[in-house]
Length: 247
Ligand SMILES: C[S@@+](CC[C@H](N)C(=O)[O-])C[C@H]1O[C@@H](n2cnc3c(N)ncnc32)[C@H](O)[C@@H]1O
Image 1 (spheres, rainbow, N blue to C red):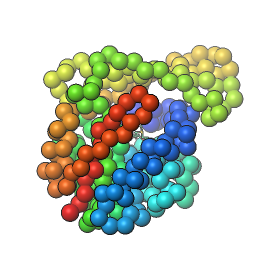
Image 2: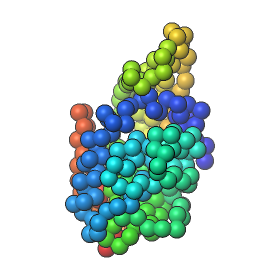
Image 3: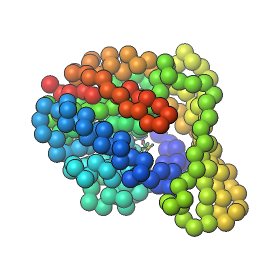
């Protein structure tokens, strides 16, 4: 499997895309509240599957003993730099074996890279195996067949306080589904990188899974989870989340 450039040679763009404290703290407080609400055991150990640059870990580690798992060596380097006290493991989320169970598992934005139902099943099967009895897993889609907006474009700017002097980055993300009948769409990222005023343009095509919301629930129930639905709202969107409890 080849890695997206954002998680490989362009991974340095990730830390300056959003501040782990300002942009992830509120979300992680919400995740923590869901862990406590639904878990049928005390939550100490947390596995963050698809931990990327470790921005979730940065917030969750205040309360939990966090392990991060990701497929990308470059993202894992960033995660370790931000969270030297946490453990990080390189693995594919569809087939990992860590030899231990966790009280809670978070699989959030990275699960978007699962583009078939079999991929989703494999991820949730692996997570189920790594959950202690009474433990809880939070997951959910960024987009579903019902919420997807064809040819939508968003523009972001690198945070001033995060970016090295002389560098400015504009991130353009365009989502397009060439074949609405299948289970994935294209998310094209274009990066306008200005180093001391000199423009460089890089691009990266991400293939993202797209399923009806009820398929998520059905798959989780099939794997064996007791499934609860939750919601997370930011300034512009409302995301459906699933909270699966291992009986
Ligand atoms: C948007 S980033 C996650 C950022 C993360 N939420 C954070 O707190 O910084 C998505 C991550 O998914 C990872 N990923 C994609 N496919 C994967 C797979 N099959 N197994 C494990 N990680 C995967 C990528 O390497 C990337 O680091």
